[in-house]
Image: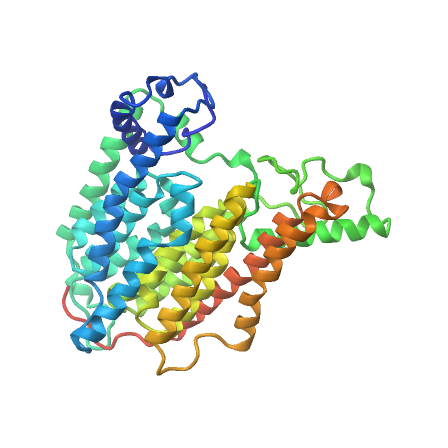
Length: 469
């Protein structure tokens, strides 16, 4: 039964989550539970939705608490250890992107991010089975976390199933534990059976997977996520305009489904080769493999796992099919944990976070939301930069002149998009220009942060000797 286009592309656990919420929602407004009552809104419905997001964020708060406990304080005094913990707690709890996506744009990313962070914390605490279980549950709440599954799989096999390493950090092959491997497999199987078992019994798995992986939606979302394909599509758009001006292209042969139409649909590029789902999968796989190889051959414990996880998230964001701009939070939130450890990671975090957060501005497009989003981002960005600069004040500056110039460029870009372009004659003919400029400009910064993190990971020396897990 196709009653609505909303909430149909999430795994079964999220449906059970909404079913549980419905038992509380009926005490607020019974009409919101009518599946045929599309686009229904009422003050009580809004109150319930806001309250439910705040309530479920309790898991996120607990996960942040557990992550702060994972900051290593053995080499520093208590006072020096407490400061990074406080900074980390603020960077996570008051994260601008998560705040506007969940509490203004309205979604339930908080408790899902909490599951991810709690899973990461369990790995730092050597509680691998708990971490694996939490991630398996998370996948069946929202399958976008498949982006980071390679990091989980390789780390658990390398650092949990193999129980010992040689002095040089390489694998001691005779230390492989089949019991641990079977235990991990059992966790994945049981969680998947609970989630997908009923659909398998009713022969409805094909329908579930067709909704989870809707490849007919097109390469890019209506608003381009700031990734490689945004740059690729923008270049195609520029080349097509030049081709038309020089009369090198036939206007009648240009595809009708335009990248800038604002619609979620399949389309064909005009000049550059059109991109298929298989092509994006191959590009993503190529982008992910170096980080996975580093995790296997250059073991660095949980910190190495975390860096690999972030690179998997960023690589999938950069080259994935129909990526949403909100997916940048999958890299921003775990990157917060690295930012308080080393100056180079703090620099990457600030570039990635500032650029990624600004790319979320188009989600809040009303006039009333404009001062709110600008003020909130300024507060978070100023605190992030000032606190991390203070934390690493004895090291070299966090930004070079090029990075500083780029980040400052976000200001003029916002002024042009919000206060200049709407009053020009181009606004009627090319209404997509602000979104295109935002996407392309942010794509440059996110690509730079991704590349800089990759260089950092590839040049990091492996741990000479690791303790038995």
